[in-house]
Length: 92
Image 1 (cartoon, rainbow, N blue to C red):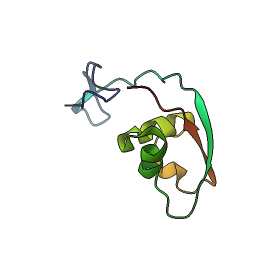
Image 2 (cartoon, rainbow, N blue to C red):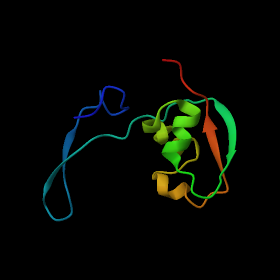
Image 3 (spheres, one colour):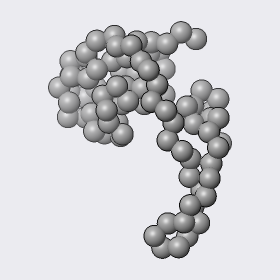
Image 4 (tube, rainbow, N blue to C red):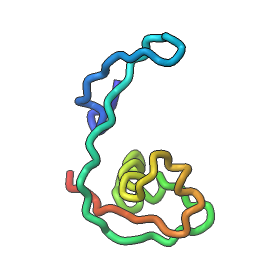
C-alpha cells in the first residue's frame, strides 16, 4: 500500500468505529523523526513545498519532513509562510 520509502511502510493498520458507526481502517501516527536543521528558506512567491524538498532534500516526496520541522500537518499550511525551516538532507 505504501512505498518502501514511506514512514508509514512498516506500520500496522487497525480498525476503529467512526461516529456514524462505520468500521474504518486507519494507520497509527508515526513517531516524529529527529532531524537536524539546515537553516531557513526565505519563500518567494510561487514556490511550492515539493520543489523545496527536491532542492534541499533531493526528494520531492520528502515534503513531509519540511512539514514536520515546521510543526504543520498539511503542506498548504506553509503556503503563506515568509520563511520555512529546512531539515538536513539524510544520507541514502
